[in-house]
Image (cartoon, rainbow, N blue to C red; front, side, top):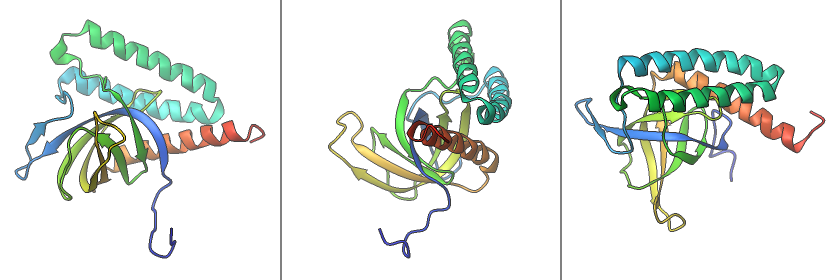
Length: 191
């Protein structure tokens, strides 16, 4: 890799998170493709609570990662209970399939069932683990390659986040820093 030709704005990690997407049409409408993505008043309330939980969890994570992980698991458990207790039309709780991704504060790469042309706009819903915080970001496809390594999801899609996602991107960056710190701590127990 030639450092003079490639510049990254954010640290990039491999992670696993819940992921769903919809295609944003030219007129601004969305076409559901990668999961159920409807927003209801209960869903908006849960998303707001999750956002507040993530901020508190980020603070706790710096002091005690074990406690933060336990709280994240408890939050996830409550989300599962809410998904089963609420009518299906109201249970927008971010229960998407966990997907391996390569992610940074500016974009994400992920395996997908379908391929996209560069420039296609997607609305992504990302559920961070273990906190179970859901982030909705608009993005544009920068590249898509067909791979033979995953027959059920043969495309590797790369997107860059659009401007206007600053609040969600800030939460994502905090998540990445936490994950990076946890990875460093595992490899160097003296840190």
